Length: 146
Image (cartoon, rainbow, N blue to C red; front, side):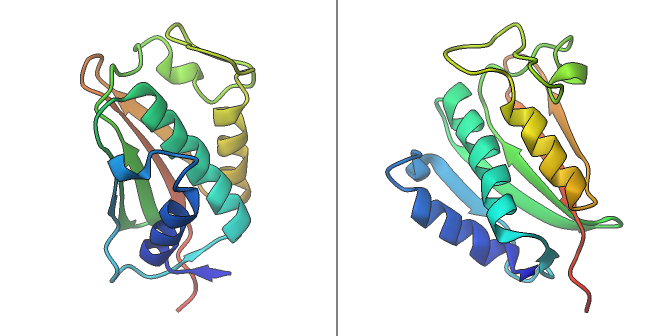
């Protein structure tokens, strides 16, 4: 479906209040962006995982941002937590990989599932981080046909 991303993120945050600490999440998605072509339920799952992880590993604000790019729209979830170790970055999206800084429960499937959902939409996902400065998880989705 054609999904207006700014409104979708606003609705996602409203429906996640009480489950996630949405008071720490900034929706920095410009309303003027073209809609993405996405399955809304799957996009919800992608955001729930990425925003949930960012909130889990960061005690400060988390930002959801987006911009138009050659491949469609580029969406980023940015935190200011401890970051991801350089050695973990290439493996973050592998099945069962939990990283050296893993805390709490989990099988290491969340980011693997997110990668598969993004790829099913024809997009790609990656992470960038500097230890001590936070992490940015970015993925692309195709823009809806004009």
